[in-house]
Image (cartoon, rainbow, N blue to C red; front, side, top):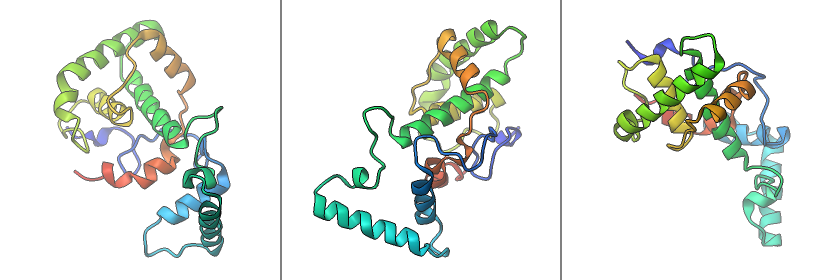
Length: 192
């Protein structure tokens, strides 16, 4: 059995649905510039993106502020860093996928069961799989989902039923598949 049984895009990321152009935590104009800059070298960079980069570099050099702050990539006190938001949403989307793979009709009992699977995965599988780009091809769909949840969570995944229930309820329609972070780091997850 391969990991291909989980709906995914061509980077091996969860196909969780949602609005394809939505970017939580990153303004749309900046998201457009970042996508253009992260595109393959064979694609031309739009003139407005080059002007944006040039203006922001000048502002950085003249203002002595951090580059991510000048480019509006630094978080304000009231918001998370957009990279953290994207990884957090991706982790939660994979947790929702793992939840969907657990049989049962009661949300509570499925969250408790998922918590047990997370504990087992963390103790038994994650230490050996942590440095892998992809889970083993013969793994179960549930372990595959947990692998990516741990990958996007940097090895930290909630396992308490209350927190899992909140994630399942709030992120059932997660939209991380268009995440800029996932696009920029896609090569990490498309290597066998």
